[in-house]
Image 1 (cartoon, rainbow, N blue to C red):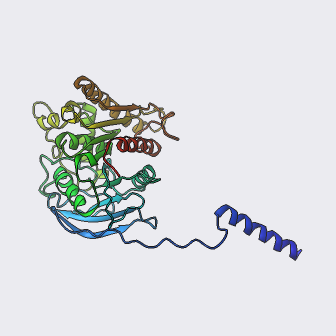
Image 2 (cartoon, rainbow, N blue to C red):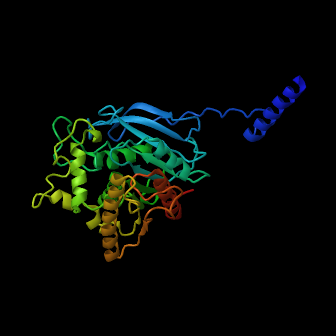
Length: 362
């Protein structure tokens, strides 16, 4: 009996060795590599130097302050005035090497964080296998809407998110990382609120970006449902505390006082995207009986994307428009609803493929 027990134990051990690939000597632990060290500049003060999020040593976070957004409405775990930025480096990135890489700036949705596990998975999985791309996710707060606010409340001060991201974060990272610091080495994308931000930034500053992508973005501020959604974000505590007045971001949303809404709407101002790579991704919400809020949100986003597509077609601007419906043929597990992880991962994989065909890279 004792001999049988010993043989059985050996069999289990051998099976574990075979499954885990542990035959031979134990693999050496990966040598620790320090993340980059950043120097203040371009209006940003580093209050926490980069640190790796895990032992894979591809993604790190750091924290900055800026006078352009000195305070902001915070979500749980955030410190007002401190902005977390997450960066995923290409495999094999060497801070001391000569190789330079293109950069994708990805803007998160509402109400969300830049450093979510889903974002990290999207960035790392879409660039696995040696894809030479740096991905950066800056803080946009739960309701920043990626613009310089029209009427920020005195309690918060300036809410110049556009200036923070375009005039500070981009040159700061170009100065501290091995980037291709030119239009043909830079892209911008975003999800939901971030999709709006990506198109808004690309239209306002086309000299900065060679490609723009929206993942279920709310692109048409003339759409009354979209306007209602933006106003709702100012009033919901879940979008950040303190809440802000309804006219704080884009001003009063009612004609004839809605000039900023009209001027800022990406759908109607596509002309400056000419010569830039353009991609939009949207589902139709799928089964309305399953998670009605996310289904309706995606349906509204799709409407705004269709209007944007029509303006691109009318202007004769080449673009990629992916309408994946209920998601069943788009990504494994994708159900066509808003903010659904499998759909967003499929969007990012496809978009990174487009970037590698267009942007300058090693």
